[in-house]
Length: 256
Image (cartoon, rainbow, N blue to C red; front, side):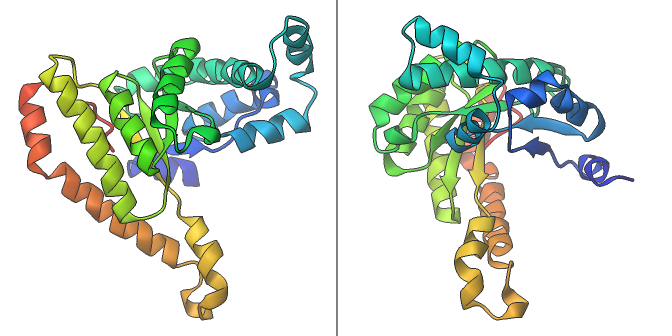
């Protein structure tokens, strides 16, 4: 059995951390979905910067929109969302078949907003509306101000992918923001099916620590942090908060 199929059989979702217009145009993304069990993908500004610099596929749209006076961040968002809509459409069947567990794509708010909760909430709402796809996560960093934006965005019904998480403590803070958003929706009489995921960085621990560790411990710290964080996740699901919300209405299948 191939590796991707083995992962799928044990309940793991394989999400691609990359997207380019070339992958969409030449059918390679569609092939990965069909043959390699890819069930979602994420993006960030660095990924799109590399895509824009590495191919001429975006040049016609850039030239046209520039002539029309669209530039800067507004142009960047248009270019990125044009790709992500197409990817979301390719993954829509996966999204529906999995009950919303898989089939997601992600678009990040501007990194310049990492310390701006109000601006992050506004950007998240604007991007989600502009994308017009139910299977699009808005990526918001788990900074102190980002946590406020996560709670408010969840309350507004916007699916959130929490990024820049590096520890169990950071994860718990992000999960608490998610719960607060759902609890506010419950009090307001709104449905609770607002999905969210937490993106924990693993390899960066090893990149930072490997030179300080003996050979036997290299590339192990990231796994340890991930295991500890997973335990915190399980504890969060077993909390009284979950039970209270579950009694009040259907909860999303994918939870922080």
